[in-house]
Length: 343
Ligand code: G3P
Ligand code: MG
Image 1 (cartoon, rainbow, N blue to C red):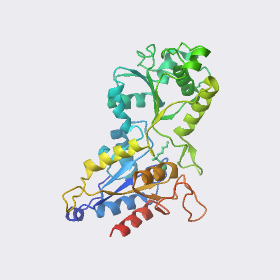
Image 2: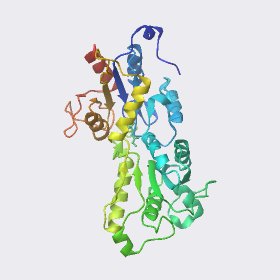
Image 3: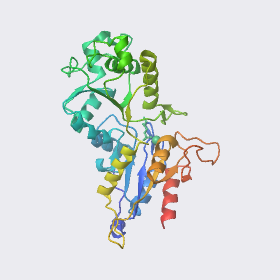
Image 4: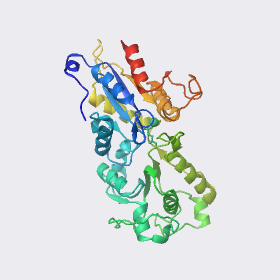
């Protein structure tokens, strides 16, 4: 692992523009690092361009993901440069300080650690519910064991999906149990009349709205948005009402505001001749038109759509619903396009 910065970058003034990288489908595909990744980062470092990573992935702490990514790519990445889907959800920790929160995703314990790291005090996971009540999902092949069982009998007061579920059947069941329970007690259920009058009293949050994402498999894979679609359908079938929820992650504005604050910390805005901070010029590079391109366009950033991930056009055409500023082959082309435009 090494830092790509060379001594020459010290003498080049920091560029007045910034680059925001998506990760999956742009820099990596599952376990593989795309061949253009290292060259793309090297080009930005040698031009002293500040950059950050904004991913809809998650399921672990920012520091752990930064370390994992640094090892994988072979370039040092600081946690200060990295935003995960659930990073902006740390703002919810204060609001739910006294509440018992059902945290869903991954293998349970990692998302529990993320939530603790953000300051949530009372956490329960589907794993822990399953460990206490094996019959909660008898069809699950997963063995449920956990040392954190203290909150299973407390009412669930909020539900937060932090990451893709590894056991959809079990997690859909436990979320539905919480949503349709009386006052959040998991072993209780509202009457039909109560469900009709107040179908949902427990607030629900998702960290990522992507229907699909891109790994080594030739075609895109289900992501958290597909899990949500299943839950929406089940909830509507059961209650006759639409599921209510709040979304984080790309393309939501809260995530872009969070990203802008991160950029302000790592690369303070340049001052104009009027003494006011200049509006920053930001280029987002992504593979998912509905997340990366819609989000960047909506926030007033430039957007570059690569063809190495979710977006797989026949030729050179742009996306019909969320056209990017430019469509390029891969992340290296994207960086070259940005630099040539800024020179
Ligand atoms: O679950 C989807 C997520 O992994 C996508 O990540 O880096 O493409 O935003 P990214
Ligand atoms: Mg992606």
